[in-house]
Length: 114
Picture 1 (cartoon, rainbow, N blue to C red):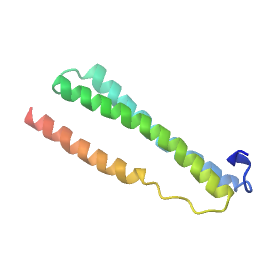
Picture 2: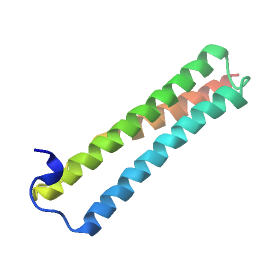
Picture 3: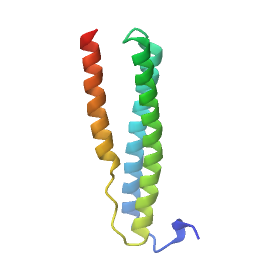
């Protein structure tokens, strides 16, 4: 039996809010992908080639992971709402915040040293 038929249908307002959150995560993933493509195609002299390629790969992988996590979070929340369970805390927020902070500091340090 599919989880979409489990329990009772949640209030449509909560389902729509869950979808909006999903779309916000997807927008974030698209922004990371756009940054990766932009750096790769439009800024070839931004940093040494190895660092630039590492940055582009990291941004692209982050975009893919965020898109995957967005779907997992949406499905988990829908399942919890259908079964009147608590919504899980999104641990991805901690990793995303720490990773963005580290990447920003590393990028700034590299640009200052150049």
